[in-house]
Image 1 (cartoon, rainbow, N blue to C red):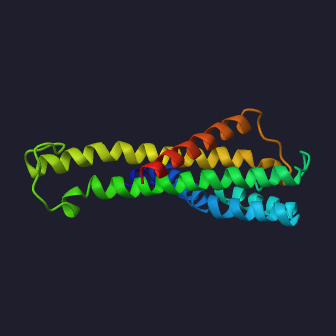
Image 2 (cartoon, rainbow, N blue to C red):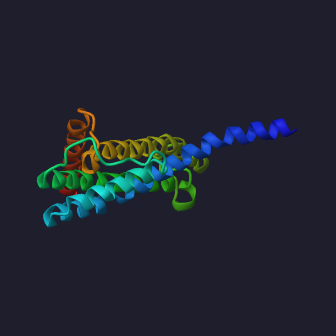
Image 3 (spheres, one colour):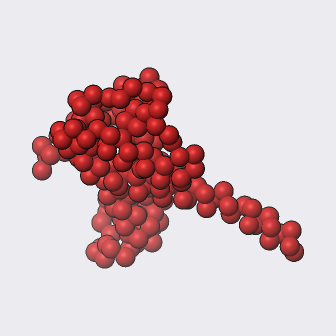
Amino acid sequence: MTDTLARRGAGRKPVEGKARRLGRSLAYGAVLAPVGAQTMADAVLGERQAAGQRWRRLAAFRLGWRGLVRAGGAGEPSTGGVFAYGLISAVLGLASWFLMLLVLVAVVRGPFWGFVDHGAVEPGTWGGPTRAGAWTAHGLIAVPCVVAFLFALRGIAALQAQLVRPLYGLAARRWVLPATIVLAAGCLAFFWSWLQQL
């Protein structure tokens, strides 16, 4: 029996670790916009080192304080570079907020659809004509959407964390800056088209 409990405990540990890493990535994504705006302000005020230390602490938090990154190893970016890092981070932060909103909507309108929609089931409703079928269909469609949105949020956090490494003295991989610029430009184009429909 003790062996069974030990195996169960060992099986839970990686899941708990993944849940914590996901939680830290979500928290990191939630602060990207304000910290990105603060980084732009730091660039304007000439506080490049303060911006670097802030991102260093956030990177250490995202990694669970394991292997705290040390400064040194890459040249210090210019004031314009720090401002650009802040701008891109703020855009990715807004994209993260939007994805978090989509997660919330998918959960509320998916597995909990029957609790929030009390009207008659319309002929075109997914899973209709019965209420139970519509509830099941909404739940089954929402679950993979939530997983995909959470995966995207974790990816945005990981990419942005790689992007700002030069702010605290570490080199970033060559593909990170172009990939981040493409992602940020895509997010801006999406936000622009979405605002035009309002």
